[in-house]
Length: 421
Length: 70
Image (cartoon, rainbow over all chains, first blue to last red; front, side, top):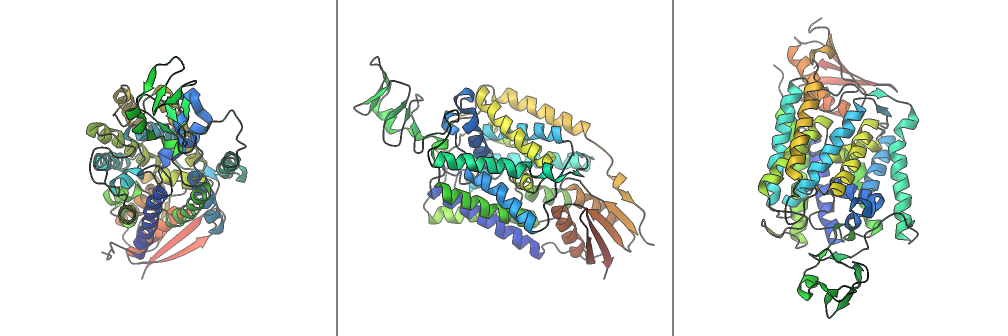
């Protein structure tokens, strides 16, 4: 029997990549990104959708093209082209991947974060994330059983070059729109949450310089928000306790885009995957990608501590709620969807940059999921789960099981010949 | 010779199928056809950790990974 090394040198490369991603994510928070959300694929892609969805989809507070996501895609494209790994491909259950991406996003927005942010939250001291992480492990465990049972979305095929560059082109268009917004030339039919804006518990919105933006006609009187007919909407105390809106908290554009580009290159080269890290241990006893997850947690933990951003506890954590069961169940669904996709949303974004049309379909599904979740109000708030959250999670779990049952095939088919010649 | 075709498969199927072939194989040469950089890298790491000498023939369409025991 051949000797088997448990940890090869590649593990340290992936570990280093995870460390860097975690460290940069924590640092981005100090530069203005939302708390424990230096880099969240679900949240940031949702914010990017908010730019288009706006008030129609109830996304006024989460509307901002996140340069980090644009950078990740384009950075991955550059790295893939340079490494001769840019290969236009697709056709592996492309439509089903849209559904899986959709489910992933809706579930992630119930937890409040993707499978990367779960670890980032943990590294910021948010103990609610322990339930999320437990959910990820559960979801990956279920997915591993399904993969062992022959789950397979089918083979992707080589596609003509124009198909491969759709993802990078979309990223390029987003980059142009983001730059237009930065220089103040944003077309009026798009929405952007004003930088530094805060909202009160009564959903009144105050700008960075203390002006009342919502509701219309309301004014600030002695520190309280008063409507045009004189009724108090938000008391002085409520105004003092107003919280920054997620889309309003952001690092400077140049920092965000450079961070995204850099991490896009690192992720493409290292093949960092937050789901693969758990999956490969359970399924194939490979530990390289796990080092990426461990690195991620160490990186975010250390930098959070250095910057004084670490706060241990369950209550009052940024962009989080304390519903343990909700956190567990939502991440179980999200983790399972990600395993069925073959990788976490971070990987889907990177593979989109590599010319993978199937990954692009998953990312598009995530975008549609964000519009759905905000439009129908299944997104959690700091107060907890939305009333419809459990019903939506149940339906999505059933759909995932249905997809898994449908897409089974024999593992033996691809092996030909026999040992020893 | 055993040949495994993992072209176009999503993670982690390329590694799973290569592992399965290794476990079933009585030895000798193993050839794996892959078409993504990620699958290629994962398979090469697996084979090297198992003590194989790995040679990669790269074309525009695919990677042909040939593994032989040292």
